[in-house]
Image (tube, rainbow, N blue to C red; front, side):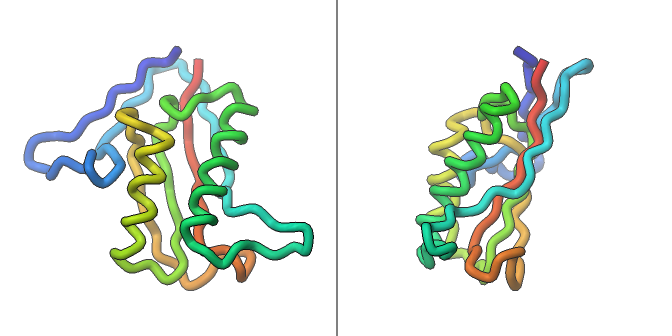
Length: 134
């Protein structure tokens, strides 16, 4: 498997408790996998749960399915970008445990982008990823 190097340089605070790494270096020759933004699941009527925590859980489960379809594992993810509708710091109580559950100690670099809305009005959360595989 492609060996990733994760760095949290001195002079920057340790972000591990918040669920990410400052820097992730991919090896030369690795194949890059780009996963489009994944959100929560639609129900049989085309609606989504209005519960932020449910959408986050479903989005990470969908991300795992997409990664596996590409032959990638969670520990091969180098970068996450998450989009949060109506973000405030209270949402970290949901977001951080979800990232820790999926990635454990193999924390990717990550950016959180607060947004007014997403592609579908009912969406409250979306996560996209970049992974490196052999």
